[in-house]
Length: 244
Image 1 (tube, one colour):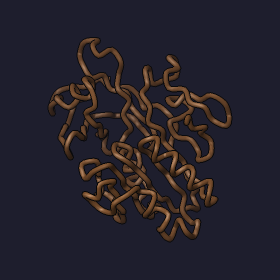
Image 2 (image 1 turned 90 degrees about the vertical axis):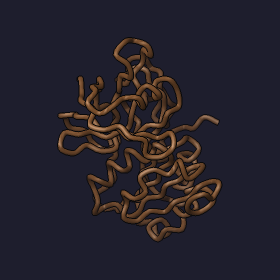
Image 3 (image 1 turned 60 degrees about the vertical axis):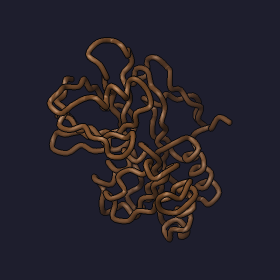
């Protein structure tokens, strides 16, 4: 559908947040496919995790990494963008558990959507990145722990360090939702296996069609090969067979 862009602003160096009209329902964990140009070059749409949907206005967060996202960054309020979706599986933590959110870079987007829809169940957010510029949306969470690899903001090191020190983790009363770079997700998955924690991981992957036809985003799981765009992008911890 053609959606009117409400705003498109750079929130930190190289990262943009776009809001546009979207009069349909969506749930945290799902994604949308955006056409970046009026013509067919670039041909493929870009998958974007949904960072929020309120009052018919959807929000996405993206990083400029190539020609497609550079074109998206040039979009102005009042222009229109072709959006289809939502697609994919959703976060579904058990009702009895409080939730710990672990995000890196644009991986914070679906976690922010979850926190907005479930403020009473969100115990804390853990946001990591290489530098201060990679820390997004920290002010949106009531309890937040930040870690950067170069120490330019928050604790120096990996975001998993403050995670394992949190009371809800040590007491095993928290349920983890995570999204971000593969290395971070592998580390969170390993910690859950080591300490008997449960959770869900949202995988970031380039997708061609977004609805399971092109098979360009297949991953190996304990239940066989799965399409990230249909059976994912959210998987339970312990399900993904990581490639070394």
